[in-house]
Image (cartoon, rainbow, N blue to C red):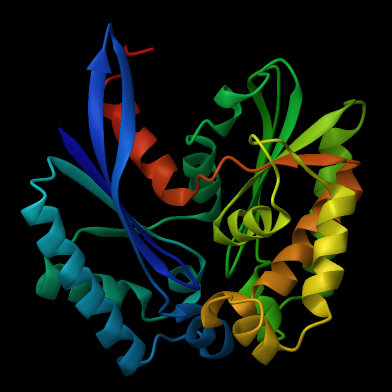
Length: 295
């Protein structure tokens, strides 16, 4: 059995095809194929509130390719979600209709709260001590999703219009930063020893650059040091000297700024990076829908 997850984000679109296994009423998945296409829909959506014909055409071509791969891999079920960029584009519903017509993909534009819940469904905390207090931090191109839980119980979750592409395009607002800080202070009050769980492509790359060993957490001090190191290079040198992909070299700086702000506000000293994201949460959402009694 195979499931597929499609995530249409503000920076990139992703397809994950996963093999589903059942063992003693326990359902798990193994990543089979992962494809990422950097379309940067956020550049259109956050500046013009409209997906251009060029970007829409590229997105449709990507969805046609994903649809063909889903067929070739004999996927039994898929789920496709679009997030912040498509939420803000006034012609988002029109693009969704075109994708259905031309690629036969049923795409849903999800609200921020739904996005946060899907990311939480990746259950990254299962690989570490579930009895502790954790703050999920997912930083995308257009939004940041925060989910706070204690002893395995979800306490609060919220999506903020604050993301890397939005910051690069000078479309972030100071009141949104303040709103995020207020949310963190309100819901972490009284909680001790909070650890972070970071998801998304930027924190995965940051963690790789940190050269941490044995899945150990990344310290705030190390993150800040990495940020200062990366920021000391020009965009061109981050690409040519550090070897970062062009579509990662610019967004990694504002991503660091968001992660550091969240961690500092919450008093988080360490962040775990389990290398999961929206697509992992989508696969887990499909599993929980189809196997409600599984452990």
